[in-house]
Each structure stands twice: as C-alpha cells, then as structure tokens.
Length: 235
Image (cartoon, rainbow, N blue to C red; front, side, top):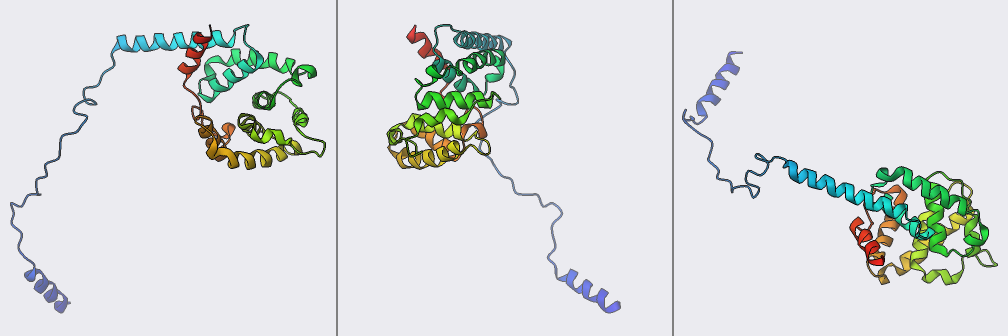
C-alpha cells in the first residue's frame, strides 16, 4: 500500500506545472454567407397571400384541363399520369376518379381499344389497375405474333416500350404476358437507352432503376407549368 502511494507521488512530481491563467486559443471564423437571414426571418403576409392566390389559380387551370370535354382519352390519361407523378393528385381526387371511371367504361369497347397503340394501351392499363379497376392483361395479346412473341416492330418504339415496362410492373401472379413483357422491354430499353434523346432518355434510366409506381412522386415528370403553357398554346 505504502509503495503504491509513493509511486503515485513520484509520477505527480514529474508532471509539468500548468499555469492557472491558461485560456483556450482564440479562433477567428469567417462570417456566415447567410448573415442574419435565419435569425431575423419572418413571413410577409402579402407575399404569402400572393402565393396562395397563385396556387388556387393553378389548381383551377388544372381542374379545367381535367374536365375539358374536348380532350381525347389519351390526352386525359397523360394528364392524370403527370399530375400523379408530380405528387399533387390529392388536390384532384374526385376529378381524376371521374375521368378514370369514364375511361374504364370506354375500355369495354373492343373496337375502340383495337385502335390504341402500345403506348396508349399500356398507359391506360397501368392507371386503371393502380386505381383498383379490374382490367385484363389480355389487352396486350394483340401486340404478339403467331409464335406468341412480341412483334419485332415494337423494338424501335421507345415510348411504347417504356409504357409497357411500367404497366408490366403492376402485374399480379400468373399474368404470363406481363412476365414476358418485363423481359422484352427491359432488354430493348437497356439496348437503346444511350441512343435516346432527353428527356426520354432520363425517363427510361429512372424507370429501369425504379418503376414509377414504386418510386417517389415528382421524379421524372415535366414541371406543371409546361403543361399549362402547352394547353394555352394549343388554344
């Protein structure tokens, strides 16, 4: 015991003495680029009111586009798809449901459906299925040849292949035609993706990484004001 205490005393004696007035070193930091922006931030009520009015005006324009009687079925499908990709579909739930219900009943017209190309058929199928309508994958059989393979003419239709790929990813167990579609579209989209032009190239790359219904809204969609500008231009 005594030996240990003596050893501890010897170690203490060998330590350097520390002055009582030692202070930490002073460091000079550069001023923040933000200045006092956050400490003095406050909402401008007039600016917020202007934003709110702009939002209401945009909602009114989109609602008018959704309910436009002059729009074709494919135009309505593209609009619904874009609104939902942007993540603002909850503002127009009733209008979207009304449109899809009407489109669903139209889809029972076989003669009308036979005139749809791959892009339109696949987009309609995906949107209706995502909204829990009972739609058959047999609509894609018309794109197969006598040997049960997808027609070779489809291999150069990038938009159609992308639409079919997205549709195939909402398949359920036992839908062989959609199982085939996944393999078919994945192969050809990967083959052609580097040759595509933006924004289609970006859309294909994102889809191959993550199909739209498994992803996050607002990714891979054109800004809404582009749609509104196109609508005004057409008029």
